[in-house]
Image (cartoon, rainbow, N blue to C red; front, side, top):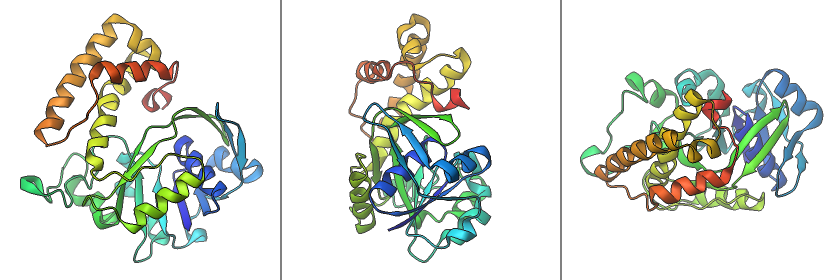
Length: 277
């Protein structure tokens, strides 16, 4: 299995290191001091589950990598439309694009079924620019529950969680999902293949839509937001509205707001990705 991680930041480098431990041919695509550190020292993971160092290949030039079986996207979603020159050298006819993306992905209504089937959301795929670069047929959805931080160039601090849920837009359990799941599990990660990943998307969004902006505005960690009465009240209101939208689209989150808040508080003084940025 040949894998390229395009945007090997905290999450991307962590996944790449795990897949490398599982025996995959992993290529991390990054830049700057982080790239230099990974080339010299490897990816150093600091984790409560045990520290380890992995030595996947690292480059800033996708053309050096060539076509791969899976492209793991660690880029911010707002850069997808411009990533064509970077991703094109990595693709062959059956390359899967695994988007570790918070929020509603560009492929959300691809093979959705019902009245929304095939609809394009202008807010996430303006003028079809993302779909033109990343064909929805290539997409394997990925919802990230692991919490990581880039402690310094080349050093990833794993805070909590190892789950990366994946799934096909069309809800089938495909061979490409099963193969990726097995590799991720061999590398020490949890990687269930979900029959309808959209439920997981809304579960993760329940937190992202509330914790992320509030953390940036208040400069607060997960624990601080959950324990402060004012921020907790705003979070509960935002989550209530989010659940209503999910239900209108036929999705069941399956977790109460109270349970979601309790889980977030257990993460402790972790900074959301928005606050880290």
